[in-house]
Image (cartoon, rainbow, N blue to C red; front, side, top):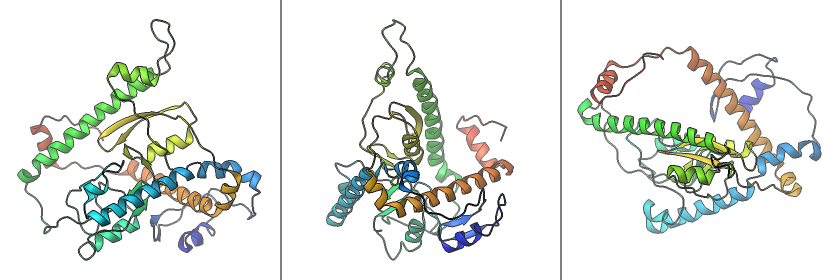
Length: 319
């Protein structure tokens, strides 16, 4: 743990929630669930926990090698499009955003926020790894801050709302298709498989490469930490999803799991501890955000309601 987090966590009483704590990773609320006497676990005791954290080690190495190749290709060509040719990485162009905030289209991390703040003097980043994947960032354009007239942003708002509505429809359709998998066939020839259900719906089935837990990236699809978590908590043969991945929807079947050797697990104990600490911090933050969300008062801008009516979108009166 970082010192600021450590100091509060080990002085807080069991069951208590701390005041907000600021660290280099952000602002945290800390809840102590239990205090245990310090001791060193034996390898036998820690094996299951270690295996869960390091199953993806080989995939993580491959992901690091792949992004390194993309970075070198970018250095040679000075073109993001050329750098990602023949890879599963994608070029994403963000909308305009405030310089003191990371764009909403990409993951937020201290490194990305720092790059955004200094983008005028350092237009290209090094490779940045976050919980949602790897990023190589570049500066394209800037303009003076101003409130844009509704007529200028109308098209973009309409496109965003339509895309969100279509994605919601796709999620519901994918959920229904996933429920059909494993159901007995009407002709008694067996049960419906992922392939048969997809074929009946005209949906493509693609096998992706190894998934790395730490990278948070799904080869050929994009970044989805939710899908990565489901992949490592399920077992071989499980159907997981659907998941929203950018503007697409995916349902997946876990095909195989590769386990690390005891030697590999033992040698990387420090990385495991760091990862577990990070996951616990994120869990606390999610619980705090959920509490705040449940008690929040939601206000909808009249301008947004007028625009929604103009383009034919029905909004629920419930919040």
